[in-house]
Length: 556
Ligand code: 3UK
Image (cartoon, rainbow, N blue to C red; front, side):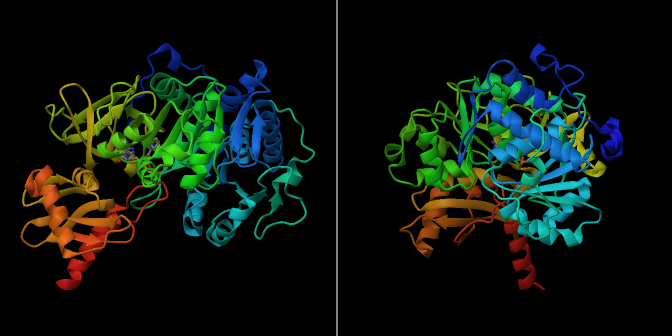
């Protein structure tokens, strides 16, 4: 297979987004291998003894990471992987995941990282859609992949991998795997020449977490990946070789891939990887590894704040900045975190399609509740259905363009929806204020239209979260014969609070006091937990569908 043999799976050129890379640091050479840019260059410049990764089992230097990457690269080549072939990966966050990811880049193949939470059905879909020729999987995550094999429509080699090269004996093969990585790399050479890769080739396919419909593969080039490090990470976070990046998003989510692999390795810094998240593990590792930049979903910050006194029990002084993405960061969470830890959380909106964050808050100029302003290199607008700018303060669709953009794999119809006239339309409703700050309202399909009024669920949620009894809440449209839809709140209560009619009224009164009264939730239902995607987003569709079904059952 030659590198461009996948060309027919990319959208037609006229549907591509406009890519703007007009600052000097975003102009990349025609040939660009990500393993060279993120790893080999540091070893060449004398950093081989510096720590690249702190994992569950200890530290790994840049030199050792290079050796491991090279050996895995040889193993993949021996198994027949050629430039342009897709390689599926299934790992918890670990040095082995990083080395495998870099090895795939080094031999010019295309990486297809998948989230550990995915089940057989989703894995089979991704293997088939990407036409992966090889799947490499951490041995204790093999079950779902084994179950997926029956539904795979082409030949795929499954390789089982241990957590570290040292700990796993090459004796037994987990069920349904064909080879074991450790035996393949045991006698592989330590050196490997990088394959020639063009800066515009496809380096990876990132599958969306699919909160609606089938997962979509978003393709990214080596230049896209570096542009997020050289734009957002350098200009907004100010990453340096002394940083220790940490957090818990999986490296299979581009938020985690950027924050925990690309950004630190771009500048020769260190990444701290946690295999399984718990509040205590994260807090302990922040102190132990002296993390300086923390990447988490907004929900995680809220969860940590539920632990009374966590900021006194754990030493958080190494942290210089926290990043929140994936869902809006409520002003109340930002303020309480700031009050209790003294550290800023920078909200930022990114997407799998854009690779990483394109609008972000900045240290020193945070407006709580706002996503901030465009990241250097990006332009952002708020537009109507005809792509005309709306007046400041008015709700509209977010349109962005810059050094990265959306190119779906084998989804021309979805491409037409996401990219219009060269602009990426993310599906989010935003408002821009007179000072150029962007304020998230809701997803376009989440607008609640109640008797002619537009209500953005998250605005109501943010206010409800300020109430003492509320731990988590989602406000969605519930069908109503009179008004079309009404806002309904699904509420998770904090410990020590019990559902009651009086509490429903208290919550409604609270919203009416804080917002225009038409926004108050006409119905409130107490639930033990909210349905979420594997990246932590509330599955509002599921709640909406539940409401629609309920209504149909009542009016057959
Ligand atoms: C929503 C936000 C409000 C928004 C992501 C940072 O979330 C990421 O990618 P996904 O493809 O989802 C994209 C959608 O999620 N969203 C993300 N961040 C925010 N909404 N405020 C935010 N700060 O609807 C967006 O269109 O899962 C985030 C970096 C990389 C990513 N892939």
